[in-house]
Image 1 (cartoon, helix red, strand yellow):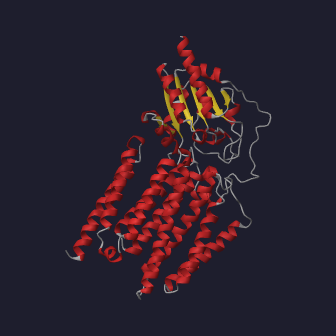
Image 2 (image 1 turned 30 degrees about the vertical axis):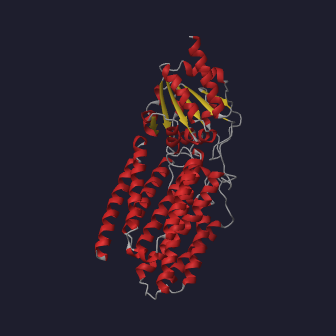
Image 3 (image 1 turned 180 degrees about the vertical axis):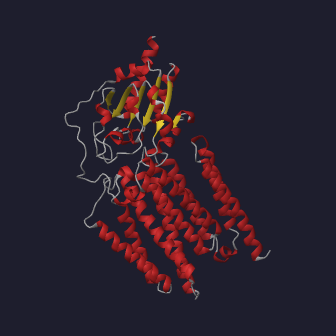
Length: 470
């Protein structure tokens, strides 16, 4: 079989893989098909890896290191899947973005060295793709690790605003672009690649550290897009059609998701990246002089036991407390008593897109009970009680009523329209935006303080006792 025949066969399998990737992404649109979509995309990747093994350029190099890499990656991926808790999913996604960017930058560097060592005359197109793969991959690498650190809490989650940060960022960006142009003009100067790599790594840090914890969903999706663009550039470097297609898919889907996230926050991507939202010292509305009403588990349990309709609104506090199974148990008890139970999911609740969906799916919450923002808002006027578990900014009425608020205009879950609201929190502390929540002081709202997992268990006990006594 000729080399051309082998390449055609490989490309045919690549087309099949790309089709499976597209079907996989389509399956991720809904919780009910997400698992199937994930498996479909995984099957596409398996086909791509197996097809690549038949590339005769790889035969000339040998398979030993490739097999070692596959086994090491499979072992690490298995360990991650079995040990990382649901609260760690956003961090893990950020780390995966970082590793994708690193792989693209390394591929670009290795190809530059190979071409120079073998005496090839590197054309402008190849030089540009090498440089872009390096820059985008390096920015993704350090930016994603900073994001992971902020999500994990090892780096301050508030915006870190260094003096003259805009001027420094502009200088670093200018240096990076200058080195990129120089590398394109003279690809034989490999020191340029290393200098550009260092500048891009620094740029990734400068882009990420001013972004606060409330904006992490946007940052993660944006960096996910970057990792795809870096992979596409690496595909052009290697002349690999599958890398080009899949990189473009990831890049485009990441940009679309970023747009969805920013619209859900009523902000632009530029505002998220450059505004330093939530910075220390920002002028916010104080709750001084306002009073709130608290309740105990017994009173809350009684209210829920006799409720005819209930909406649960979950946030990052639910993930931190690992209370998804308890909320499902409480919902089941209420349904047995004839209550119509729904879950309201805000697009930016949690620390990554779909975080709440994944968390509730782990507790086997039925997909048809999950409602997005627009759908659940239409239900809230007729809802008897809303239970807010660990959410803050996404239910803050200031987004609708206070033009001076930094979250003004952000679409929220309008839980204040319900007859009664129970807010489960550890304290009256503000959310990541750093502002007070008007909802907490409204007459229909009662605060149930404590760890969400413990409080939900207490509510389950109270509802069970009422059911037994009847």
